[in-house]
Image 1: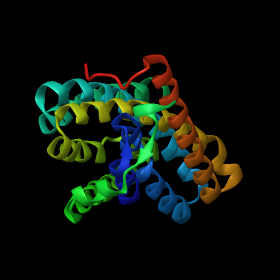
Image 2 (image 1 turned 180 degrees about the vertical axis):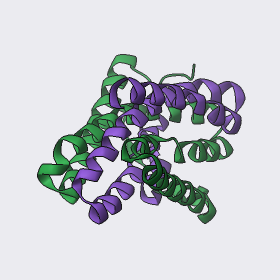
Image 3 (image 1 turned 60 degrees about the horizontal axis):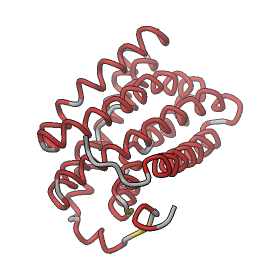
Length: 97
Length: 137
């Protein structure tokens, strides 16, 4: 997590650095620990669910770009969480459940 | 891609950030990882997995960028995260498709390479189409 955060801090231009804001740092750590402890089949299910969360993150990032510009990063990024929940839940309910 | 849109590293930028900047993001990450695990234990791994795509670290990063470089730069960083998130969908699909056959470690390595490749290709495609770093909406 910290390594990806540092990469995002030292890379320019900002849009390129922004790629690392959605890097699979938490996912890799979680899937590595979980997979080694509970097996590949469990990781397969976690990663299947993660598809819905990642689709939500696409929409979140777009909403955050708009909201941060107008509301500031703290309020904007919190409000944008709604834009994560709705598509993530929709993909989960329609395709994965 | 040449000029100001060519990716480059500025190691000196690290000096703008204190240790707490990284500690906070580590704690956000550890918190969501733990949360996803607990949700997975309670509601099953499919639901827990959804939270592996939760934007936990991005809000902390955006707040730091706004503090150090301004609101506009934070909004542009978010636009880059759209491309990173599309690549994250590919990452998850690669794990789903390969983890049983390759095993956990090899599958995650392949997925990381796929994420980086897709993210970088999308960045260059966006730059070629836009011919500039986009202004925030």
